[in-house]
Length: 300
Image 1 (cartoon, rainbow, N blue to C red):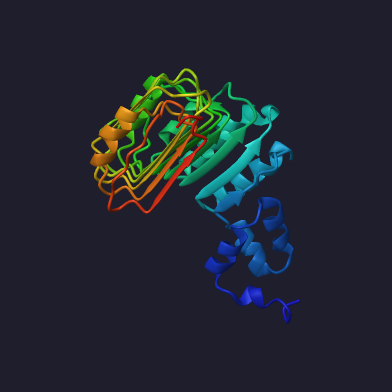
Image 2: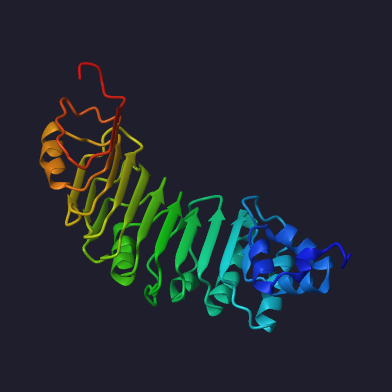
């Protein structure tokens, strides 16, 4: 085996980088190849249980986390998709990850009625948080995401107060991406996120009445609505920075567009889809490189 296993001669960081691309079940199998591979697996700080629902005994995950705690190994990245019968264990797992200064957390469950454990809001070292199927509520001790750069929510629920608290507490946020979300009446960024570059709002719910964004460094904005015509969109203090604008099923009127476009001097990509309120379109730009209109109603 040693004569054939040339990979074992690679530096440990490279071996661990290779293992980080494998799901945990496959990465663990490499531990029998050699002592070097066993060491690489035992100290692996990026744990990906994959997109397949984690159906193993909770003892498997408990043991993996316990082994790394004993070695003082901090989990840098953790990804898992959990069935409902594992939710009772999530709180303890999150506490362990937060105590170990988790940097990137991907956690998904099946339903959107599960309250996100408050322990996660104490993750001061967290850079990226990706959640699916959770309800976010204000924690009793406040939000302490002082290092958070990216927040991705899929089929999750939060209200206006939670969004306001996130914006007030996460001044380093660069990416906000919400897909098939619920609970918001107003998506408002009121100038508290100076580093925000990307906002992605996909399949906005009927409850959402307004999108109001003030972000001086915003580069990319994508808004699409579940129902026809999300009514009010206000974009301010990001006009000179915005380069990519994608609007779908949004109430874009002739006047709104006429007032907006002259104030977007650096817009390079502009995509409009299913915006039935639009009757005529006039565009004049020296910087625009790509423009696409799709599903405009008859008579346009």
